[in-house]
Length: 470
Length: 90
Image (cartoon, rainbow over all chains, first blue to last red; front, side, top):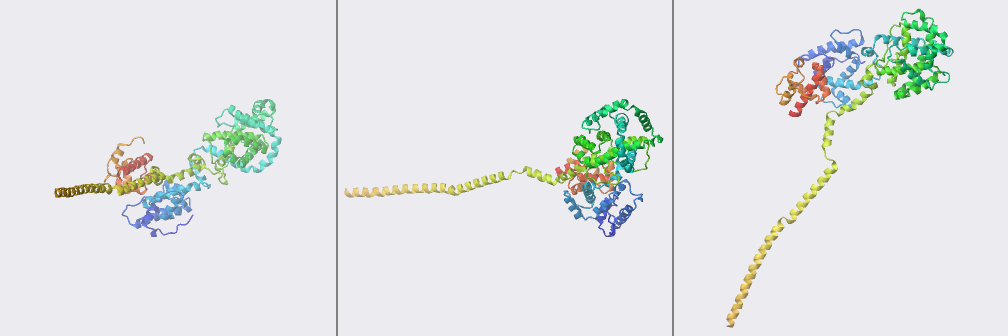
């Protein structure tokens, strides 16, 4: 974060005002001098900057809103450093045509720009702190997940070793899982066991050769085929039932290995191979799990795939949780058992956001993200629409009202031709008809008189000659 | 908003003149007081802010929320009333 070195006394009054507004400080009355603003600025803004470095010291005057902004303060400062023109240019770069940026509007535009910048920033894994604030899920489940994750990390070594044992004890684990899947392990999933079995049988058909039996059959026939296991399993389930049965946890260490290894390895495989495919479509789920099953060659995968399917349903119900935090490990056998069902839930964040970088805790997402818009993507679509707000819409409206250009040209040509014709007609005929008419009239009258005169003059000589002859 | 309030109709019916900020639809006594404290004592001052934000709904709503803590309905009422006033008198 850039250290704030500028002297607030050098700021312009409007700048001070806008900064104060940006930090939610109520402005003094309009007539107050610049010193008042500077004092306020020093008091509120710079104190807050100092508080950024030591996160524990919180000013009393800063209310909840300030605290909310506290996390985003670096960005706020960057924005506050911008000049009005820069701010406007940046807004334009993000497709927002800003109006005048003045003291009363600057804060709004800063916030808008921040909002525009946020979708980019959200790809960074920085939202983990807020995750707990917004999660409305229960503490209990969180704890389970935390411990589950911790358990997974700590047992990495043991898992590898136990993976070899797994083959030998596959029969037992089969039976255990059947017991767990069918009857016991899903206390908080509101699914009928019949539905579970339907999923299982659907999944079971393309199974590798080793697992010839059906899970359903196994779970139903389990009591017959593996009668010898009953006492052990019963004791184990009873110990799982009791949260305080810590003593019974020691003998099932190998059992817990058997159970944990496949699920955790499946989760690891899941995060690598399946993450993208899950994003593609949910229908690929079965095929990918089949492939995964081949990879691991373990029947216990079945448990996982079913648990995963359950998690899909759970996601629909919005009861799943995307985040988990490390707290104090407090393992109880009951929670161990629940972890088995909850285990794949931790990979859902990666399902939803395959492009997010992995974090040490494996936490990327807050619960808010899917609600706001699936994986944050629609937020991107939202902003190209925004610039179309007032001006462009007006322009589009005007364009819509305009007549197409070829019609315009056509009309222009028609009008031009008409005008020319009128002009030509007027030029040719305007006077001429009348003048010619007048002229012809004059000529006609003149010639008639001439004829009369000529006739008279012709008559008199004739008379003269007649009289002369007489 | 299916129908407009009486306050809205009254405000839109005539030039705002020197009307108080509380004449704006969606701005009651409480919000009016807050606005007056911030210097927006007349309706035309709010109109000025409305215009300087280029009649942008989002920004104006934001501003109104910041300035006086108006809720969504109050923001919408005030925005609609100012916009309609502008349509007829600007």
